[in-house]
Image (cartoon, protein in one colour):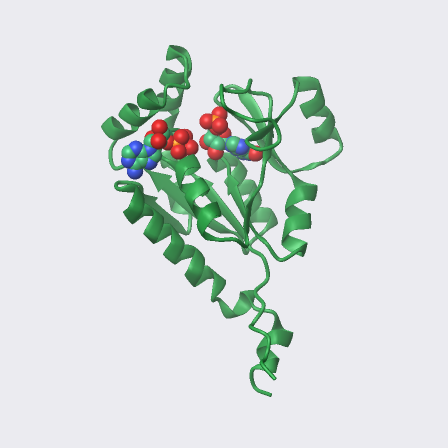
Length: 207
Ligand code: ADP
Ligand code: 5GP
């Protein structure tokens, strides 16, 4: 009889980095490549961008609705980022982990520090562009921000970068393929940690 493969428990993977560094692009590539990974859809008070779909990209909420969720302790973490509120709904993350999925969070540095203290096993990855010049080019090229929002995001990039020392890994997003390969290697290695394996499945290997 063929034995079952070792079952790994789901893990939380946090991706942070300056706006425009490529977190969204890399997240989408990871989700395509790792079928056992799911994206944690955040709630936000930011208005939707064209092409953003409620429920897929974000749960778009009024400030009142966001505050209600805060009052119900419904967020694993939350923060004000670039003048808007963002939060990770706790119930969805818990459900996915229980079902054995790895959960990918694209959240800011403040939120990442909250996740670190609540889920010490979480993997924290910081994504950066190869230079500030390139970051500016990418953020402008994306064409989603007003002049004021663009300025604010660039001004805050350095503040976010100062917290890089709290992360487990850094991925410089120079070429997309290369950055994706490095990110995949991180996920694969983290999944092989003995501490993430189901002890029952490991025992079965010696029977
Ligand atoms: P973030 O989610 O970190 O704000 P995005 O994923 O939206 O960043 O990327 C910002 C812009 O840069 C997008 O237009 C995206 O297509 C582009 N981009 C992402 N990665 C690269 C790369 N390695 N080389 C060139 N452009 C990139
Ligand atoms: P954007 O408005 O470009 O989609 O996101 C702006 C910033 O908010 C990004 O740095 C993104 O990582 C962060 N962000 C998105 N969702 C959350 C969340 O649920 N919590 C926190 N703390 N930050 C978030």
